[in-house]
Amino acid sequence: MPLLAALALAAAMTAPARASAADGGAYVSPGGGNVRVALGMRSRTAGVPSLAEAHGLVRNWRREGSVTRFEFSGYYQPFFRLRGADHCRVTIDGRPATPAREAGTLRFDTPAVEDAERDRAKVEVHCV
Image (cartoon, rainbow, N blue to C red; front, top):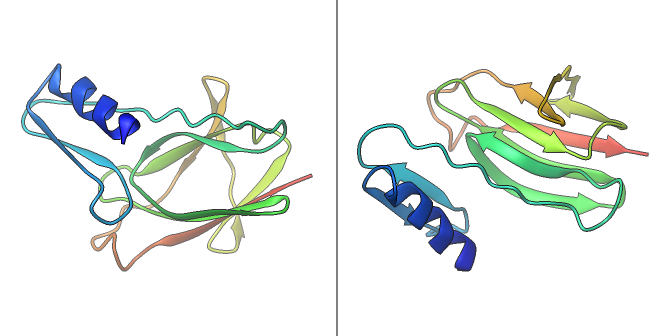
């Protein structure tokens, strides 16, 4: 829970906020104003991608050999950024995804959805 506590503290500095991990995920909900939270989960293994930032819901993150899989969805201008994925091939719902290079990461924008619980994009990151 230290990461969650740090997120709540960082958000509270600029606006009243609420943090929760009820379903195994972590989020910060601003009480007013704009709050930006970036999770920097760094890889401990060279050549293994990590999530640098996400503007949306990341679910079921798992690594199987050289493939990382997760589900992603968001309501408004959703995107995610991967660190350490320069030599990887990324697909979203089985289609090749073209990233934008941003701040030493690869950024992937996805379509907004109305029901982020039901409409989840399946992301696969294949690294060599």
